[in-house]
Image (cartoon, rainbow, N blue to C red; front, side, top):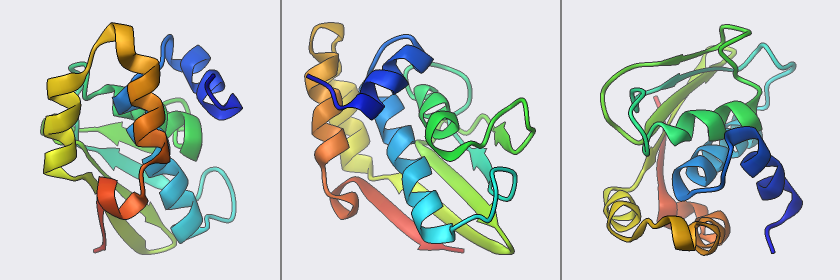
Length: 135
């Protein structure tokens, strides 16, 4: 059974999957470390482009961070990277999915196991999953 926040993410995104969960985690990390004062103070540039499955990061980030296309505080650039740069009050933070984790997701992703795989990345230690840098 998925935790409530992943059930809500699944409804928002249309299904649950590892990249949506990774994006969700990125947004939560940005909120925790940058501590925006309101929903418009945080900005994000996602480097995935718009080609699934890696672009599913975008929905995860929108869902967790309140950076949304409608508010104009998120943008997507076509670099094909599983990475996002967050900005708040003059501080910038890059959060990148570790290369070995991206390879693992891409090699193992399957519709039949998406819930199991999503939980795995949801529970994984932040330091194992991401490279995080203040820039």
